[in-house]
Length: 127
Image 1 (tube, rainbow, N blue to C red):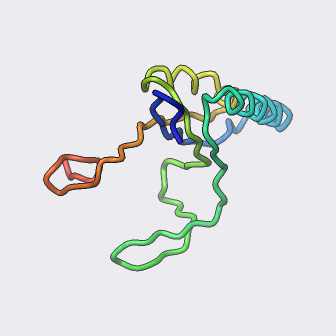
Image 2 (tube, rainbow, N blue to C red):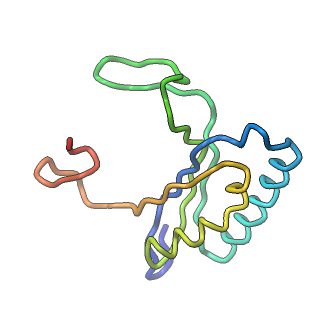
């Protein structure tokens, strides 16, 4: 997926719209987002992504549980891919997202194609 000499970063859309924001303002930000997204896609700065549906299943050693889960403090609304030279460049690009004005925020993570290992510290390693 990465363009020549570019790293691929996962951009997670988090949060919810500001409660006091008007529907018109939110729709304006959404419309501006899609224009911004399509422009960056055409320029090769973005890879495809998607909003996430509201259906959720949590799968663990305890079984499968239906969601949504009210105890979840962080809502992930969608994901996209940014193609950039480094994480700072990816963050600067994400900072231009028009939806931030209405309450959303974004998490950017570089993709790590290295196979997992119990011998190497990772996101799954307990503190």
